[in-house]
Length: 315
Length: 102
Image (cartoon, rainbow over all chains, first blue to last red; front, side, top):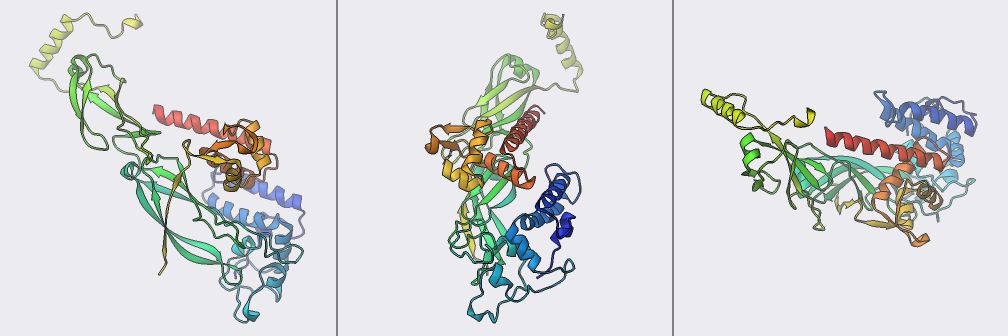
């Protein structure tokens, strides 16, 4: 097992008071918390700081940690004889083959939650498994149709001696159709394993949907820009437009203004329970940049034939 | 060979509801802390009525954010967490508005 110097991580002395430890942690949390920090390695730093604080804030865990002695950070070491009997689970089978070699110090102390009480074991105490969080980036089409994603995880699970060890786990999660960016999903029971009959933790997914060249999602509703020629906007038209479910014909009413939203009912995102949003085509007036002589003359005729003033309200 | 475990993700949105006990279990906050968040307006119960009140499943996300803020910044005062949460909600609403108008 590799040693981590939690006191050095928090920048406090080994005999620091609880208040000093909390104060040091708060200062470092403000500096490295990913929500507020601009430091490049903030997330990694914050993890180290949190891990140290999680152990040193708890009297029993701190006592267990202190009992491991002081070593150089990263140094391989073994806990003193009897350590596991005082603070952890008692190895079964006479302890002949028991080893801390591939145990992570953070997992070891996470496994001590509720077990160490003045040196007495509390095997009856149910400890819920840890919740996991994962970010998932999916395409717009996957969000529209629903998809499956797989996670390769390395999770801490109690071995036959109750000591947490890292084991590989593969979880395939069905993401229902109709999810949108920023949404959170819960996968019950796919977090860390509970200890002593405690419930298994959950896996929480943060959904990020890649932007689509045409559609923008707002809840279950979708928006897309619909360029119209000036004569289509004035006279009205039937235009073919794409939707995620295929092309449809949209009737553009005469006198359509730029920015006007034309609704395609029920053509937005759809949830498994059947609720669905609408697709809004937002009209934009597109003008030709190149006109030939005849067209120029016709535009001139139109100008002379109309009293329309689009800036009348500005006069 | 690692065995593949299959599961379906549940949407945490306004369509589903959770009980107070489920919210306590899934957020890691105590019932007292949840009450403070409700009193401060950071959480809105869908149905009032003491222990039988229900919350929108979206509240799981809000309550878990509150728990994360409490733990990550070692905050002792739930009122402070509630205020922080309200400010974060305002920032998120403004960011949504900004994205919508871009």
